[in-house]
Structure formats: structure tokens, C-alpha cells
Image (tube, rainbow, N blue to C red):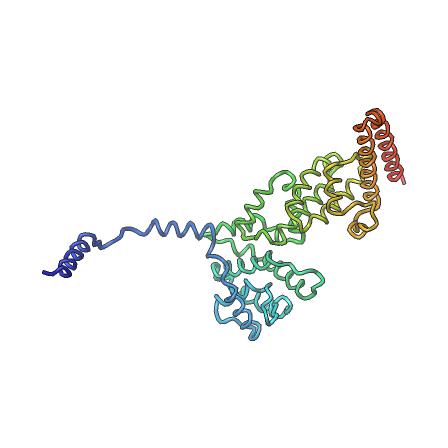
Length: 347
């Protein structure tokens, strides 16, 4: 027996020793698969190339060849396909046809839920501006469809995203983020973000931005004392979301100016001057659009007071004056500022 034959013999002996007729029960694997399905659903969004191809076919024919094709179009309904510049939202007729196709799947709960998930993903990814006309109206039609469709995704086994959607079905309301305003102020933002992540709402979604403005509105609608307690929290929240920082900051500033004899809020002044510029400079006027005149005067007075304090503080350090003079002028300026604010509030 040569070396090659010996190797074959040894391999056959090893294979015979390790050979098994069965690898045991697959129940544990099936259980794991069921748990994954329950938590995450049927998978992630398909590739953009597949979505774009399906949108082109649907745009040309107004029909879908299969359930898979319908799901792909649902994912891409709010995405513009280039270079053709196809955006289905701009065509209410095609949007209506697609929703009719999905509606007919209600008798097939799993397929309906997958298309619902795809439409929901598109809904959260993009919200056309109201000036976009047909696109915005089509988006509203999709929102209404999703709101009505939450009833039909209630069937077992329910993936965790579907459970969370039903809990947070307000995301399909006219003011979807209003319920989160006070919750964010009370420190529940991590829980809200966890729920959004399970649903599939991306960090760049418009709804992630709107919850910050909802918290600003909730704070501004509270009493003076409570509002002042919220300011530092709001400033931190807005810093996390630059897209609404200016709008939110102006709302906070306008609300603060309504407080009788409102003392200077250092953190607010610093942030305002950093983002809007010094209101005493005419060149910064465009950046202050949307700020009430009383709020602008309030910040201007804060800055004047700060400059006077710094001036006398420098003199004091140079030995040219003492701290009593600083205290005197500081108190004088504050009385003038408070008197001005009282006059403004009294009309």
C-alpha cells in the first residue's frame, strides 16, 4: 500500500467514526428564529438598486408583478429615483393604486404587515414641505392609511416593532409629537428613543426633530417658575439637535421676556449671543428675525449691564476704584433695566 492509499484508508476510518445519521432536534434553532422574528420582524430594508428598479416599473405600468414588488415600491414611495427624477409622491394616482394593492393584502396578515412596515419606513424617512403641493398631500394620505392600518397589524405572533407601533400610534396623528413634550422634559428621552429604534425610526427622521420642538412648546406653556426650571434642560436638548436649535431658542427667548422682572439668565444670554450675535449691532438684525422686540431689548440690556460690570471690574483690578463703586453702578443699571421691563409690561 503506497502513501496515497494509506491516506485514503485513514480518512475513511475517521469519516466512519464521526458519521452521524442525525444532528439532533432543530427545535432550539426554530425557537431562536421565532424569537428573532418576534423582535425584529422579517428583516431589513432591501437595497436601493432593487427599490429603484421596482419604482421605475411601477411608474411605467401602474402595476406590480408580485408581493415582493409591492413591498419594494412601498419602501421607495417617498424616494426620488435619479436620473429619472421619479417621485411617486408627486403622483396621487399612483399613490392611490399602491395603497389599494396593499389594502387587498389585509386578508393575508403577514404580507400586509410587511408592506405596512415598508410604508411606515418611508413615512418616517421623509416629510415633504407643505409648499410641495401634491407630494405633501400624498404624504398625508399615507399617514391616514397607516393610522387606520394599525388595527390590521394586530395578529400573533407580533414582532416587537408592531407592539411598539400600537403603543405609539400617535405618531400617525395630526400632531404626532405632542404627547412626548412633557415626557422629554421629565427625562424620558432615552426611553422614547429606545421605542423609536424598535419601531425603525432613524435618528435623522423628522419625528426625532419634532420631539424637541414639542418639549419647547410644553415648557413655554407652563407657568413662569416651572418654565425657568426647564430652561437649562431645553438648552441642552437643543444643542443635541442643531436643525431646530435656532427656532427653539427664539421661542424660549420670547417666552422668557414675558416673565415679570426676569433676571438675567447667563446660560441663555451666552447661547443667544453665540447663535444670533450681539443685538446691539445692526449687522446682526437679520439673524434676530422672529424674536419679539421686548425679548431683543431684554438681551440688549443684559449685554449693557455685563459691559458696565466688566468696565468697573477692570478699574477695580487696576486700583483706580474700589468694589463699592462697582456695586453701586451695577445696582443702578439693574434698577434701570428692571424699571424699563416693568414699563414695557405695563404698556
